Structure formats: structure tokens, C-alpha cells
Length: 293
Image (cartoon, rainbow, N blue to C red):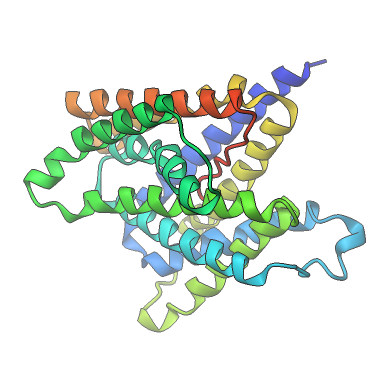
């Protein structure tokens, strides 16, 4: 029988694996319109909520006390999702994953303005280190005017606001409802792109596209379960296995070899994120780390 911490480790590992596979499929899906891929991410993620919604809430599962905050969370979440999917299609996998680790850096900054939190010297130092890491990773794109390097940065900005809004929503709303509204929003957003030309997938592609939603949905559920069973400080470092998976997948499938600058920058971003997490835990505050939800 596994202990709570061991269960937490297991769920975090499964979450990282699921997110990594989802990123892999998104990168593969570049022959399909982005709106169509967004639809599959949302629609097939919705299926999982049937097993999550409490039975006593089935009749009024949609009820919320804070519709406008849900709207802003969904809007910025959608912008973040579009950005990360665009980045995955046009940049090396390891580069996108490395920059995506910077979300806690911007969450720290946004918490000053939206939550009136005080940020000490250690976290400001971590923010500075993280920014240096992002600049080092993005420098090849800036020097060659590769516009796609801006998309993972837009992603971390969007997800940072999402983290703040989830903190605010979770004081009155159940986690499953916050995620459910987002899945509905991106499903509808994807449907609106049909006039721009969807492609009819063959059976193999249909299954793979469906896996984007399934893996994305279960990854977020496993992430929540991980934090339910174990301390955040114990399981959060496992998230950085995603970079290892990205390097392996990128090399084996697309012959992508991360540059020394990417690895140095990724190290700085990871160190920065760990410092921020440690300080948050010491201050007994909870950071939301959901990525595609």
C-alpha cells in the first residue's frame, strides 16, 4: 500500500507524462487547423467531467457565483492555449517547454497587482534570474527576428493571470467547475473556426487528435490529485521531468538538439521557479500550477 507522499509522486509523474504526450501530439498535428485542434482539446476533455462532478450537483452543475471572473479566466486561458499550441508547432519542443516553466515568475509579479501580495527580496531575485533565463533561451529568435519565440512568452503571461484568477475563484468555486467552464469555452471557440476550413481526419488521426483532449484532461486531474495527497514542495520538482521528455522526443522524432543556450536558460528558469515555490510554501501560500487548464 502506497503512502500519501508516494501517491502524490505517482500522480505527479503520470501528470507530467500525460502533458508531455499531449505536447507531442500537438506538435505532430500541424497539418490540421489550429482551431480544430483546440476543439479536440476541449471536447474530449469534457468527457472526463462526468466522473468528477458530484452526484448532488448534476442538476445545477453549471451554477456559479462569479460569472465574470470565469469569463476572464477562460479568455486568458484560451489565449495561452492558442499561444502554446502555436509555439509547439513552430519551435523546438525543448525550447517551448523550457520557457513554459517561467509561469511562476509572472504569477509572482501579477500577485502584487491582483492580490496585493508583498514580494520579498528572495522572490524578486528569483524573478530577475528567471528573466535572464528567458532572454538567454529567446536570444536566437530575437536575433533572427523569429516571431514564434514570442508565443511561449504570451503563454506564460496568460497562464500567470489564470493562476491568479484560479486562486480567487477557488475561494468560492469547486475546482472541477473552474476547469469545466474552461473546457466548454475552448470547445465553443474551436467550433467557431469551422468556416475557416477544417479537415476531415482519417481514423488514425481522429484517435490521435482525441488523445489531445483526453491526455490534457487526465493530466490536470492527476495534477490536482498529486497536490491532494502530497506536499507541493515534494512533488513540484517532478514537473521538470517534462524538459527531459521534450529533449528525448524532440531528438528521436524531429532530430532537434537543444543548444547550450537553451539548456543554460532552462536551468536558470527552473532554479528561479523552485526558489519562488519554496518561498511560497514558507509563507504558507498556495501556487496554482495548472498548465493547459
